[in-house]
Image 1 (cartoon, helix red, strand yellow):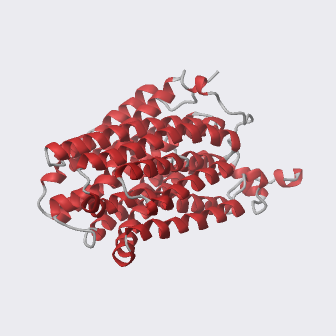
Image 2 (cartoon, helix red, strand yellow):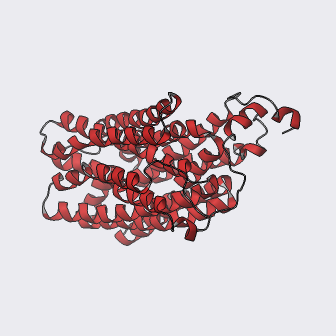
Image 3 (cartoon, helix red, strand yellow):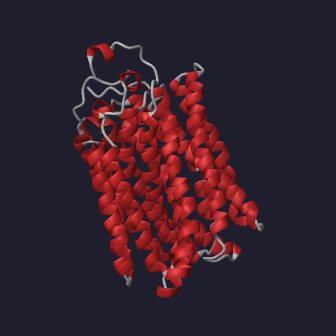
Length: 425
């Protein structure tokens, strides 16, 4: 950037940052296709290989173990090597592991393959949030996060439409091969198009000044020992530990719920799942839009984020009754409201690190929080398998799902009452 160009009045001035957001959206959608496919195929694979709920719980558990380890690795790695290279490594790893499913046959082989997918997929959100922190000013970050996070719902929408059709036509192994090809195409586009703002040839000076106006002067990574000494880190991590497992539960167990409770099958549960995740998509965007709109209207960042999360926590609570509802579409409506509220809550929680920590710490912090969420996911996988094996009902699982968001918000508020910058030094 020349000195003459840098003197121009800061303003949006362009839309390159939204092109970056579109790439992040696509990556997140593909990430969720590749992770949700095992849930869609669970009834088919359980019948073919005689899995029990505990067996399937073990497959999900080891995916979460890989995800927990991967979050720690990629959170730190992405702060060191940057979003571009870090994202490429993560996508490459999970794509190879995903395609390898086409050659597995035993329960242990599925466990190993899912562990490797979890290891690679953990890099998606640290890299996407790192890129968002680089490419968006504070007032737009929640909206950008909500938009790319909506890709998770698009992935969840596409999967129950695409995977059953491919499976019924060509077999379940082809489902892994075909979906893996889409991720390879995304990786090529990412490597060609993505650059940091200061090195992006298509970015004009006005947009550059707009997106970097609240950038820190230091770019050196923050050591974990500094992050772990501040209460804000623990508040974020505990909130992720409490709420992430609920989304994992929806992702991996909803097909089984529709099969067991409402007697659907591979050919018929696609439309209810699509409805659920379309509404979830709207919730993700609405949650990001609401807090961003409040900030632009003069509400403090602290109040905007927390009021939005409180509303989302309230909207989740009807899920506690979903397993006792006899009507399929009434149950779908209740679950859809809960998943939409989760996504609205989640996109604001994801934005908190960039609100209170320097950008150079965002990747590491997201890694810590993601690991905490994956550990929670490991526990919910075991809990769900145990409950269904012994009690045969989703009610205890949904009661947990409807109650944890208030606790998570309380933890965030107690550890960061005003969302002020964390004191790392």
